[in-house]
Image: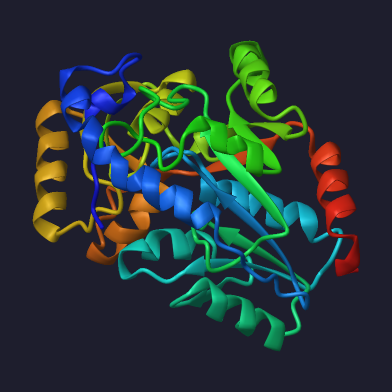
Length: 315
């Protein structure tokens, strides 16, 4: 599904449109209530973790999954990542390609495949709200810039679940510098004192490939386009034009020709995200470059020990 978030979702307070849509959140509330009452049996042959979100779009689930996979390989080599197959999500599947990725039509199928492959640990990219499976550890990703937007459920706001749902989760990955997220940490701990919080940030790894004296046109079709632009600005790139598309947008050759012609007209070089580049490289547009980033976890030892202590049977 191609999806572009309404701007009012991220206003500090709900606006008129949000208030009008508020009655439409009732089915979401009822669905969440019924799903939380459902009893699911765990698969005891494998340990499962889920990296998900309650805020719709752009919280860094995929890079967090990759970072956790790389960290846990030190603990157990029989580890893989998992993602429910969607034709429109081939960009994320590509990014996970080096992590023993297992795909399937359902997450139950994926778990069964992993067991047959004799995997011991399986990390799901997304799926917290899938009540057909029960995970051993459940993590919620947040971007401190967006946080929970206006705090309301879809479609009145950006939340799949209310913030109080953190009571049932084990950990939080919170992206942003500590000085900016201290108040969010206190808020999370007030809801769930036992939840573990791990701070993360993006690190640009191919900055030297760009001449920062140039002007740049950037384009992206991701859940949080603001993060992409902010990372470039923080690394002293001069952005003179930005074009945004819905999340998981499927580019056409015509789209890229327009972008290239506009860049020539305004005298700018072109940068996109690695996730978007996966979808445009097939058109052989050699004058489009991508920003490569890694997600950095500030306290890897704490995270390693936390996961290990909860998955000790996976040895």
